Structure formats: structure tokens, C-alpha cells
Image (cartoon, rainbow over all chains, first blue to last red; front, top):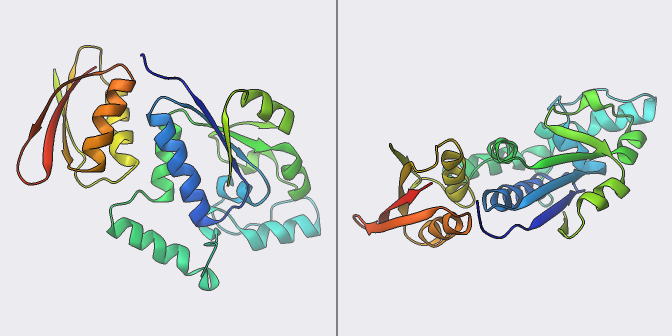
Length: 160
Length: 73
């Protein structure tokens, strides 16, 4: 295949529902137009790639277990504005379906099929007491910032 | 062999994502006919296909605001 070959790396930091939709929209769109895409999940962003989509006592001590339970997984991602106690992400998903806009699970599936690379931040996982086995299988590797930067050499880096 | 894909109910980025995923499953030389809406899909789908080295053989208007494009892998 011909065409331009560019790289895009997205740091998924916030873990907000709407920002994750934005990150995956850019990722899927970029991968579909022949760009090499890497998503680097750190801090709150890790919630989006937990295997368990609901609340679970993950972690190794009381604090990390409490944090992980309160934050939950992909099903508990809050909207960055007007979250209304967690109702808004469900309302927004309903609105997205009604408008024929791809939902977060659909975007994640498309990104996976298009070969978008997922990395999880080793340091943030350490703080939150998360293991590789707590994350979805699509995560390619648990890496540090040096590896992420090496892999992103020459890439546009977007922080969301 | 000619394949067919209707993306008139899709919005960005799934318009060109679905085209890309379908083309990826096809063999070289096969044809894909895509039914799409005017506007963003008509602007982006043929362009993204050409950027990736696929040949856009034709773009034909159908009824209101729809087009049929024929892509060769």
C-alpha cells in the first residue's frame, strides 16, 4: 500500500468517558487512514482498559483497593462535565446510538481490528496496585515512559 | 468479485473505518461498491482510499444526497 505513513501517539490520562470517546475516535480515524497509532494509558485512563468493566476491589492494599473500587472500570467512566452521579454516560451513549455515532465499545473494537497499539503505564499501575492480568488482552505491553517515547519517535503526541 | 457496503447510516470516523476494514478482508484486484451520503463521507472515503493506494474507479450520484463509489483494491 502506498500513501503517507505518519505516526500518532495519544496519552489517555483523564479516564473521562467523553475524552476517551475523543481519543478512540482520533485513534480509529488515524489508523483507518494508514497512520501508526499508539495509545498510552496512564492514571485514570487505566480504568478504560480494565478487564472488569464494573467496580472491583483490585489492588494490593487498602488504599489502592478503595481507589480501584470507587473508580470502577469502563462502565463507570464519568463524563467530564454534568456527570449527574454517573447517569450522563448512559444518556450520552443513548444519544450516540440515536445519532448513529459509534459508541465507545464499537470504537475500541474498531481500533483493535485496525491494529492500534495499546500500552499501559507501569508507574501508574504500580501506584494503583494493578496487574497485567487486570487489563484487557488487547493491551500489548506494560511499559515506562522511556519505551513510550522511543515508540513515539517522530509521532504527533496528543494528551487527553 | 464485487463486494457491497452501505455506510449511509454511519458517521465519522466509522464511515472510512468500515471501508478500510472491509478492504482489508478483500483480495487484491477485487472491487468494493460503497453507498454513501453527500458531505463528509463523499469527501473523505474516496480520498482516504486513494491515499492508501486503492483505486477509485467511479463516483456516481444515485438519488438525493447519495453516491455509489467503486473502489478497486
